[in-house]
Every structure is written in C-alpha cells, then in structure tokens.
Image 1 (cartoon, helix red, strand yellow):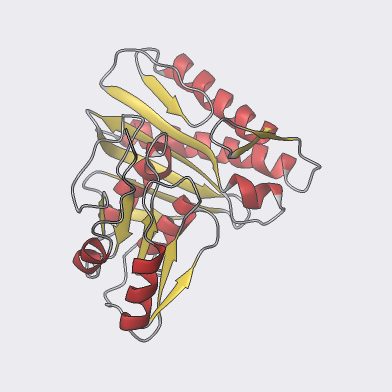
Image 2: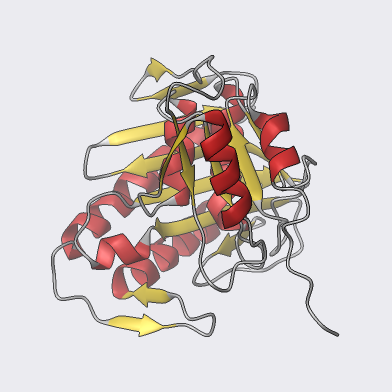
Length: 266
C-alpha cells in the first residue's frame, strides 16, 4: 500500500541530499531560532522543497517540517527534518542526514533517512523490513557490556536531565557512550547494528527527529518508545523523548531513565 509513498520519499531524499552537498563547506549564514538552536539556508531550502513537492503530488496531505509546515486537516502527515545535525553541518562535519516519514493517524508507515556524504539511503515501510541501499538491515542481538556502543543527545533546554543516570548505567554495564551530533543518523546506526541504543530527550517540535527512525528501526527488529516505554504519536508537535534500541536493552534504559523529567514550576 505504501510502495508509492516510499518511492516518492526516496526521490525527495536524493534531491535534498544534492542541496546539502551544494551548501556544504560554504560560508553558511547561520540564524538563531527562538529555541536557541541554529538554522541555515540549506535547512530552509530543503524544507520548502519538501512542502512544494508534497503539495503538488498529494494536495490533501499535511506536512510537518522542522522549519516550516503545511498544516491542513488530514490523517496523512509527512514529517520531515530537512537536516538533522545542523550544528555539525555548519561546522563542516559530514554526518548530517535528511529524514522523511509518512505518518497515518499518528503512526509512521514508511520512511527514509539519507546520508548524502556517504550516499547511504536507509528506508522501510510497514511489514516489508528495513534496508540500506537495497541491503537488508537488522539490529544487533547483544546486550550491554564489552563496551557496547550507545548514542546520547543532550542540551541545556532538554526536558529530561538524564546525564547522571546515563553515566551510572554506562559504568555499571560497561557501555561506550558516543554523541556524533545527529539523532536521526544515530537511529539509523541502531537499525544497522552499530549502536545498541540511542537516547533522545527532545520534546516540543522533536517528532521530526524520530518519525522516520521509528519505522526503520522497528522494521529492522528494534524498538522505539518514549522515555517511559510507551508508544506515542508522531503527527503531533510534541513527544516525550525517545529511546531507540535493539530491543534487548530497552527495559534497562526505561528503568535507568525513570524520574529524569524536569519538573517546571507553575
């Protein structure tokens, strides 16, 4: 059913990749957004490209983009992060990716993650498995220990203060912690078996980081939930963080991160 949407997503991913490569290593003008994160002309150009293509091809579908959206009443929502890893992109570090997912009634049904600098296209659709460049993906089947590698992301405005908890877990379980700078790319590396897990404390406006990762990782045999181990919608502008894993270490992560949400004064 979603073959057409996946084919469309792949084409858009390659277009977005060309835009990323066009601006890479240029002296990019960087703007600071209201949430103190940065945005570049490349982010904006790709986001607008996605909106234009979807409005033309699927006029009754909505678009939720990190920089701009096309909000209409529809059960079909395309969720896009034009460049995940804008900071490393602006620093000329070639690890940033494009991601796009078609979300139906809150559930990602097909998605792509494209890394143009190594020309790797990760993709999946419901019930069909996950692939990278036509090679089937599978999460690894190991638990913690022996310096298993795991990704984490954190920033001062994050809604979960989990660094101390994660440090304790890493010491106890002998986990090698890495933070390359792209949540979505890290999720793709969970799907390919490089990471056992990835922890992401994003909330408001962060569904764009996880929507495509959700379908790709789970079709590769892994698990993606919020910080409490629950399912969540990806067509809404707020999520409760994300734990992305091979499934084996998932319960340990949910337990380790319990109680790390930040309580704001009313």
